[in-house]
Each structure stands twice: as structure tokens, then as C-alpha cells.
Figure 1 (spheres, rainbow, N blue to C red):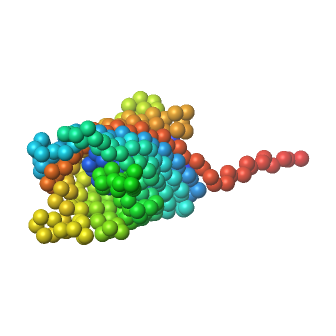
Figure 2 (spheres, rainbow, N blue to C red; figure 1 turned 30 degrees about the vertical axis):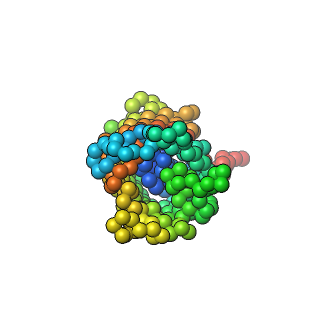
Length: 332
């Protein structure tokens, strides 16, 4: 929505929803690529408005799943986790067109093995994302927005990370080392009388092969949000998210069935994410959330997310020229 026409409370709600995607490229605990899509759930900005978003996420897992049930048979890991921080910048080029740039850094991606005293650690920059969003339909009076977007994901390096002369396995690599594209559709409807807002997000991520001919699976993500004002400056948000990911493909190796499909990859995951947002001095928006998986279906046998929590800080800046002050006419 256009910044100048949005009331402060409505603008806050968009800022509060900036941190709602838990795992952008892979729902497993030690996901590859950026695990947090910071600004993909925020609609278009007003012309010459700049949005700055910073965020941090911790994720932990200690559970294997085979299809829709837990599995403890012949498992390799006892736990896995990561700590990630990122930043996103969004700028309103016109009233309908917004451009966003996002990047982040893994402080650590850790796997702890079950039967031996050994851990693996990865760290470094994740993939960056450049996204263009267009407001197909914007009606501030009815508080309705329909926005579509196209994103381009890029690696900061196409080479896998090597530590102490050993190439890390894919689960702890900080980046996919490959390019990708995303398509986004955002729908928003506000109900001012009851201080309630509904969000709907549909996103499709397509990944290309890396230099080693490995292709991460594509992801279809659908999310629904309900946001409600609790008391002054406090807003509660409930998100229900479904992620469906196809199998990875290793073009350089054949699996036991003679194909390129990576058997232990791909999933269907449903997550509930309660969130709380607070407006600081009417300028900074602070959001905290926790992701709780409620349904899991994993192809093969995979380590799956147990929980994660995140915190974000958002602020909008008006970089446009201020309207000149009208001087009263002096009557002699």
C-alpha cells in the first residue's frame, strides 16, 4: 500500500508481518540458503519510502521422520541447529513498484553425531535475494491490496565451503551455491472497525543446478495470517503455513533405483507460528515469533525441525522531499 495514505496502525501491521517465513529454501533444521524471508510478506511501499529490516533466528531439531512418523532406526545424528542473522532493504520506486534486497549470515550450522563424538560446523553468507513487487490492486479506503512479485536468488560464491581441507556436507553448507527464482502473490484485507487484518501469501521457489550438477527441490509455500490489535502498541499474529518441497536431484550420481532423484529429500510440512509485535515510539516495530510444526511428511528418512524462534526489528523512512510550508499572505 502507498505509505502516505496508510494510517499508522495499518502501516505498523505491515511492519509486524515482515518476519514470518521460517525456512526459505529447506524446512530441515540445518537448511541451506536463507532460512528467513524477511520482507517477502510485506506489500508495496509508498514512493520514496525505505524499509529497513534486521532479524535473527535460532532453530533446533533432534527428531527423524520417515514419511509421517518418527524413526529412530539407523539414524546418524542426535541433533542439528543453526543461528542466523539477516538484513533486508525495501524501497518504493513508485506508488505501485517496490524493489527489495535481502542477505544474511549463518553464525553456525551444526550437526551432532549420535554414535561418535563428532560435530560438523558450517558458517558464512547465505544466498542473496533481489525482488520486484508490483501492486496490482491497491485500495486504501477498503484496506485491500493484491501484489505480485518476482524474485531472483543469487549465491555470493558458487564454490562449496571447505573447512580444514574438507568439503562440508550439504546440510551444513551456508549457501546453495546456485541461482534461483521466486514468484509471489500477496493478498491483504483489513477490518478497521475490529482492528483485525487478514494476510494470504502464495510463493513458488525454483532452484537451478549448482556447478556440481546438484539441484535443490522446488518449494510451494502457502500462508494465512490473522493479525489483531491486543492493546495500544501491541499486536498479535497467528500464521498457519504449508510448505511442499519436491525431491532434490543429483545429476552427477544415480540413486539405488538408477535415477537422479535424492530419495531422502522433499517433504510436506504444516507449521503454526504465533507472533507478538510491539511499536516502539511509533517508529520501530519489534516482532518475536516461534515456529511449531504440527504435521510432517518426509520422503525417505530425514532430520526434521522441532522448533525455532526469531526476532526482528523494522523501520520505515520517508526519503521523499518534504512538502514546502505554505506562508500566509500578508494583507497591507
